[in-house]
Length: 280
Image 1 (cartoon, rainbow, N blue to C red):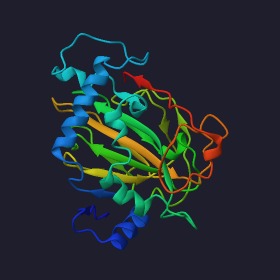
Image 2 (image 1 turned 45 degrees about the vertical axis):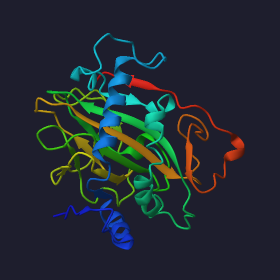
Image 3 (image 1 turned 90 degrees about the vertical axis):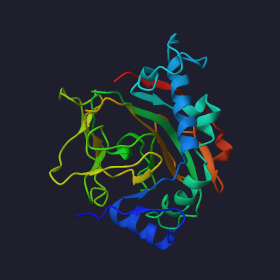
Image 4 (image 1 turned 120 degrees about the vertical axis):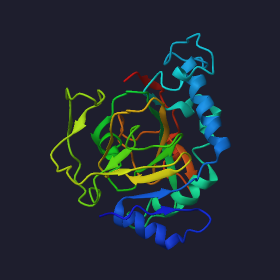
């Protein structure tokens, strides 16, 4: 049985948090993001879903900004920091970086403490909305050096009723990346599903609003259907070591944002992340 210890920024011991992350492939930090910041992010999510920003990703709609349907109009919204300064400011939020400083390279020999942001994404489950299939983030974002770190910011309480994350304990340890394939499973969204492993020991990670889950790119995880009558929004962010050469669609993906330390590929320049959105 995994002891899901909820760390607190005010009382955590750095070495204990790092050791926990290495052992379990994740670490939960309770109430890391303030209520004011949660409200700010949720309001920005509504504006994005309203089509407030001038891009071709999301069609404008005339719903009022307080219409709760706006929060979950799109299930997935990719790279919102590319056009939203509100979301951009959270990728190097001091409280997130306080944890990231300890864990991004915790499994990387000779890590020099430098890391970069690779992606931001909203993942929202509307009432009765489907879950997400089993997958590893490393499958989609191929760092292959064990530095990929997902950050999952709960913008509402996340429970087994409304579609919290589930993980398979110890699945980050083997280094195996399971193939993903199309499926027609009910109650699961249209993203491809990973197969070839035993998920009978999966456990839920229930979280209070403002809590943040940091997890390894190799950790198998999913979410289940939202059986509640409320939206379950979350903002996710991905980071990896600055030294990682990232073959994500190109030889070395440069739609990144340096966060800490030197970028050894700075001479290659930077590109703008390409926004995208998916209804379900």
